[in-house]
Length: 198
Image 1 (cartoon, one colour):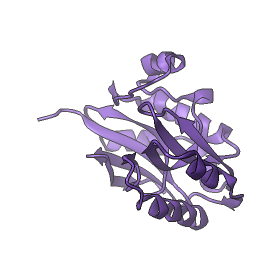
Image 2 (tube, rainbow, N blue to C red; image 1 turned 45 degrees about the vertical axis):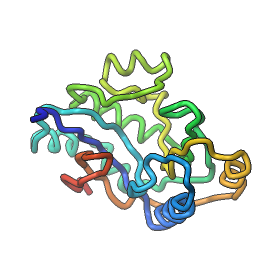
Image 3 (cartoon, one colour; image 1 turned 60 degrees about the vertical axis):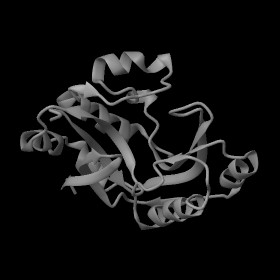
Image 4 (tube, rainbow, N blue to C red; image 1 turned 45 degrees about the horizontal axis):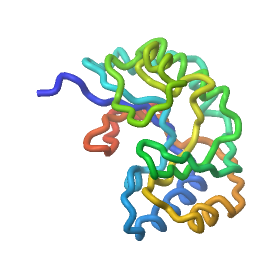
């Protein structure tokens, strides 16, 4: 029996962004290309990793972070799309919606990692060397300025340039609040909610 559980902390988008992301997921669902993350609920990942004994006291530590209430009452803005190339594997492209103002989210993530960093890092393949210090310090590579808050549509193999441009070309502007902050266990790449923090 595996003594570690893969735990993640996730922010769920509001209604408008959730619909936009899900519509794009539905569109790419018809593609025959290999894909990752397509079946995930729309979310922003703060962090994930393997915890030996994640418990109620860890959730209390997360809830004790003062900035969480500020985040709950703050609107996020999505006005730009982006593509991470050769992400996870060579020839895979990750299609994302970027959040405009990131400092608050980055600060919250850093405070959480300082209180309860994973015991063991998740597997990160094709990781750039610039992230190794974070991985060593926090068991998570994307921390602080290296963390780019975003909502992912899909990670797709060999997507045509026409489809990439089609994704990037449509203007977007969404301003709303996150709907939920959740702790989830990641089982076979699906998120099982353990607790809703708000």
